[in-house]
Image 1 (tube, rainbow, N blue to C red):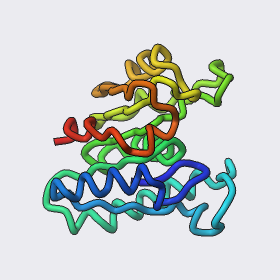
Image 2: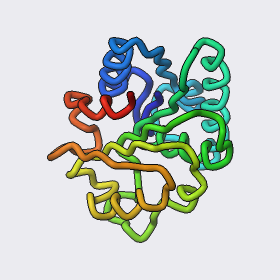
Image 3: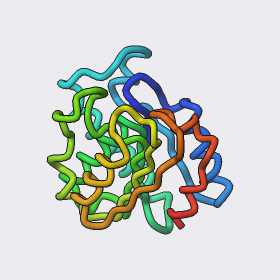
Length: 176
């Protein structure tokens, strides 16, 4: 599990997800993306995206020998976007993908969709999105999810981009 653009691996939502999955006996690695490892604050630069995907791939390769079953890659916002782009390139890297608050477009700019890579994802994808998220309305997200072969979306009512900081994790039951 990895974080959004302005955060790190200690984000409350990531901690809540990791704790809930660990209670279900899942091994969970929360990791900082390479741009965050280099500097403690600020947003990622566009030139850093490929390096962030390479960092995610390295994390998967590190944890795979420790896992007996399926391997899931997940992330919040920017971290999820980079994870989805990685899986569009490396289609067999993991068994499934969890995208929390996928940043479908910049707030207020619905014409700038970030969907070009989605049809190339071959693993099952669970999108989790707040109904009040400015990065994509429920209707916009429903349309985007249709681009992925094996995907479903779960909405958290009245949640924004932070998904209420991980207070409603019922969607994790769908990962079993």
